[in-house]
Length: 119
Image (cartoon, rainbow, N blue to C red; front, side, top):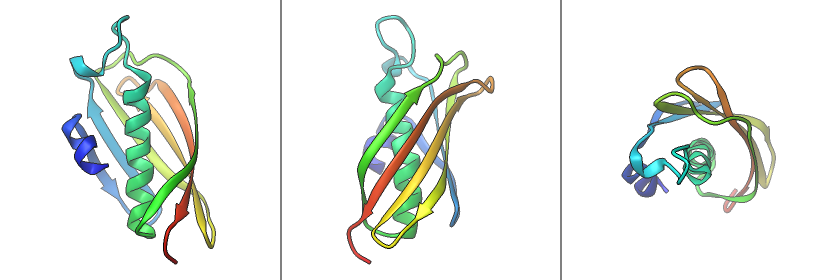
């Protein structure tokens, strides 16, 4: 995941026991036919933030269920995804990721249930 994310201009900006922040400059290869940020680029950034946090706490984890709501089109030049823990259970961990652009606009909200492969 990290190789894919970094090759697409995504960076891990902050990581702690409770939070991960990832960001990316919006580049030409992130745009769709209408010159908006492709939903897959937004999804990947949010997924990267969730994976960074869950694997920091419980290596290895894999996403088991993901739900994303796209809230608005990006107007800025940078996206930031901030991930926090909703519930850290015995076999799974649930995180929520909020993606914003650099104008402060809410772009997407993702909820991820990740399975802990080893306890």
